Image 1: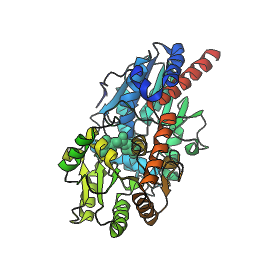
Image 2: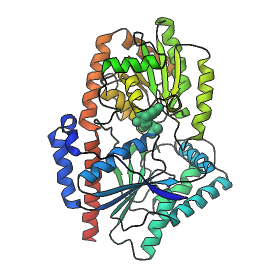
Image 3: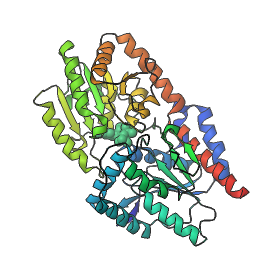
Image 4: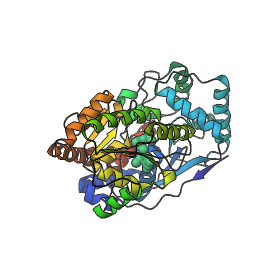
Length: 426
Ligand code: UDP
């Protein structure tokens, strides 16, 4: 097992000017002045699949363009059972009641010990460990460095992308002492900060990259051709949910909502577009179950990266959707919501905190608490094209103001800058 460096594409802050505006880009450059050459290490579990990887592919190269020496490493060669365990940790942190067995904790500890032994060689000025998978390894390396007097200038952060509002006690009890080994924690919303966390907690909301193929406008003809390629009729009404195949995203609820809509709009189609992440064995099982649930309805399309749905195809589905659905029960943030909003689509999303962080109900989308409500909002949008347009317009402006990559990088730089000042005072 090793840590492998992820080779990210080059990105330039200047390319963000047309979307984020001059002030936002200037802000990043100003904050970077005090941090030029700083060595920043991001550690996460996987280079592709899911929101964290999506974010780091932009944040890391933009930090580099701003003048920092930012690098990103992922674990390579961890056994499949480890990811079963970390998925369970993820699920229980979001509130699922399914205690980990002593054997599962042992596996988590063993893999992390081996990871700690091959941790990317420093010195680093700032280390950001993402999510629970490498949390323990980071805590160990941080602890060892501190004990050996080698952690003088560096600052270690645990970046939690998960909705921590209702964790299962038995999981959280094990993890919070590890979190407290760090210098700081970063959460997506203050609402996720828990009192057991004794270190400073910063709030940083995620973002989307307006220059990525996922978020650039697609030529209409090309987008329609993508739909056709996957058996979807571009001239008929389309509901879309893009998500990993994960129970928290409630894909079965989306099918139920679609069936209610279908009773009023017989020509409606549904596309459930999802990727299977390397660290997500549960997703494979769910994909099969969903295909079963679609049960021979030719207007329900369950598509994944295994069918050839990648970034450009995801973009086409989002862009051409009449309604984007994100029926999440729990959602740390929900980049798929941000992506739909940026494409000026009306988004109907669950009441999860991550959805509420982005959508102002009735203004920039709709928040729903049940399958019936989800269907009712979709019907309302389908029966009033002006409404969909108005919601979509507000949605795009919200993303421009708050959720583009430049703002995200600025938040990190500001956090690093403050940590450095504190270090110099100490
Ligand atoms: N995604 C994708 N293909 C898919 C499903 C998802 O590229 O088939 C992307 C999606 O566009 C988004 C990210 O994966 O950028 C998912 O992030 P989100 O925060 O919505 O959910 P997470 O997977 O992190 O829970």
